[in-house]
Structure formats: C-alpha cells, structure tokens
Length: 359
Image (cartoon, rainbow, N blue to C red; front, side):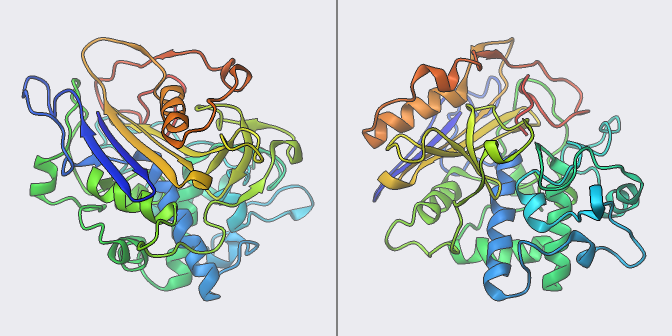
C-alpha cells in the first residue's frame, strides 16, 4: 500500500508492506501504480479544459463527435446523450460493453473500433439525464469525444493539457520497461504491464505517489500549484433529481454527483468529502478531498495472500476527517456499507478486484 497526504503545504508519502510478494522492499514515492477508475478524474479535467477553450460544451450531444456513419442511440423523445451525461454516469449506458475476453491484458478492452461498432446497436437502460448507472464505457466514449473535438489522440491531449503542466512525468498510458519494473505486484498473477490507451479515459492510467501528490495539490488549489479549470469539483446533480442511483455508493451514500467526482455528506458540513474510488488488476485505489480545509489523501493497495475484512474507503474517510480536524461521518452515512471481503484474483478476465466493483 502507498499513502499520499496533502494538507495545505504539508506533504506525506508513505509505503507499507512489500512492492512484490517476498521482496522485502517497501513501496516508495516512485513505485508505479495503476490508478484504475481514478483515471476518470483526469478525463473530467480535460473535459472542463476544453469547455473553457470553447471547443466543447457540457450539453453537446455525443453524436456530434461520433465517427462518420455511426448513429448514437437516444432515449425517450429522442433525448440525446450529452457529454455531461457521460461524465456524471447518467447516459443510460451499461457498466461494460461485454465480459472481458479471456487472456486479455487489463484495461486493453474495448478499443475504439469495438466500442463504436457496439454502440449503435444498444438500447439505453434509461433516458439520458434521468438516472445514474456507473459506466466505464461511458468514460471511454467521453475520451473519444474529447479527442475528436481537440483533433488530438486522447493520450496526447492528456499529456499536453494536464500531465505536462503538473510535471507528472511518471503518469502514462504507455509504460516503459523501467516504469513496468517499478509497478507494484499483487499476490496473484494479474497479467502483463502493457499500454492501456484503449481504456485510458476510464481506467488505464499508470502513475506514482509522487505524481499523485502533485495532482492533490492541483485539485486542492494549494498556492504555487497550477489552477484547475472552473468547476473542477462542482456538483452537477443530486440523487433527489434522479429516478435512481446505482454503482456510486462504494465509499458512502452520495449526496452529490460531479464530473467523475462523488460528494459524501452534507455540503454545508465541514466534514463533506469529494471522492473517487477505483479498482482493477489487483489494485484498489481511492482519492478523497476536503477542499474547505485544503486536505486530501490518495491510497493504492494491492491484493495480498488470502482475504481480509477491510473497508479502505471508510478508513480513508476517517483518516481524512482526522487530518482536516473535522468530525468524522455520522454512522448513518456508512451503515449500508459494512466492511467487505476483497476477492481473490487469478486470470485477468475482469477489471475489478473489490466485491462491490469500484472501478
């Protein structure tokens, strides 16, 4: 496990356990990790940057950026899927396009060609904008739309508009041999360290604790860090505005839905958390922010031998509250989310490792 803490100008990076089973080597600030669904936070940042540039609008229909000849499905009364719908998991799309093909490396499916061939044949689960259903494929399509709008491949856009400006030099979709050698290893064989640009917008990004510290400073608007675009952590919807909310409650009951972000707790409370969970390829990841106190944490932990009763999200929220000097969440926020068993994983046939599928 690696832990990154930013509190105003204070910074802590700490490793626990082993970088690989039996190595005896602690993870450190340069250990490579898989961000899994925290990659979506980076995609949402790019969306807002292109909004600020005037290249896209949150209300733009996905159809505007679809490949020539591809018809994007619509909801009742021909309601289109918008970029905002994709970023808030309200597009009416399923979680995945299909089961992961056997022996396929993590975060390499579906690729651009597959998902755009798949999309026109789908009947939306719900009318866009009316219900939340966590969707990985939605963020991959959002990344495709941003690439189309900018005229640049998604990895290039990510590097030029975010990673380069923050100096996140070890954050990538194309890990080098040297970076792969630093990748934390899980107890079970999770397949190769390989390019993951196919699912980069939804979960494929590799990073390090050092780079995640820079991201935390950016998101918390620590003086000296580059400024994020307006509305980076803003809430777009509340659960009360929607018919249903599914797949967004891994760290607690949502009280707000942002662009990739989830809000926990009363927004008027000093204990409010803005968070994003992730999981896959033997990793569980979590980022939790208390913007009012300019305090944030990031964790990445890998599967070990056997199973353990843990709730890394609840523990992280309690740690964040303690560091920020605010009350912990009242029990009612967490009462429906008892500690869960983390699944054993063997062949890389699925993305998620947590029983509640946080990816």
